[in-house]
Length: 180
Image (cartoon, rainbow, N blue to C red; front, side, top):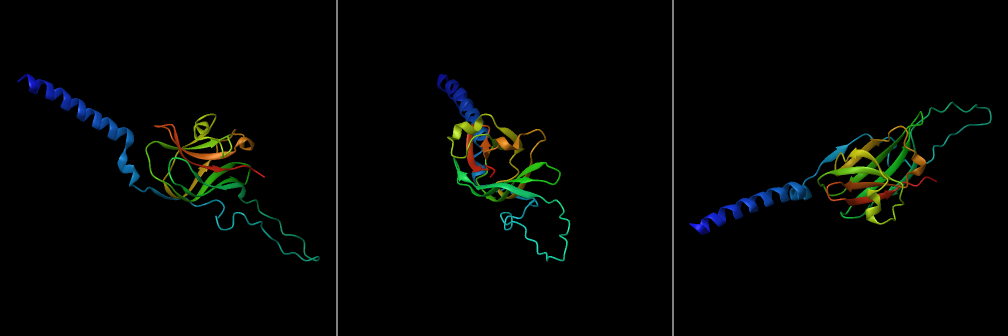
């Protein structure tokens, strides 16, 4: 009987430890896909092309409507997880800004956020967890996404955008967003 008294607490501790481990690490997220299909503000295929106009000497130029414009762009650099796609800083009509991800492809994970960082994308991973502006939770680990930048954020100080796992203080990926 004394041996049985010892086994019950050990079994309870093991079950609790397994439950906590599953909650924290969520290993099934490595196999899940959360796909997002936001409408991109500037199409990825034309975002780096300057608009052209054809006017002759006898024609007055037509008034140009203000449109969203890509002001910085970069490809993802993988940190803890392989990541591909393109991130862009977009200036919206009226002066507001957004960040968009075109064709993002990364691993799913627990507690993922999108951070704007004042640090260059070549910085060490741990620096991206300091001095950032959070744009909220990552919408999905695949597809096209758009995140509004809150009013009052100094976009001239943005050097990169980061997919960050808050739970483990780890970067999934970083992309440069340095303006020309």
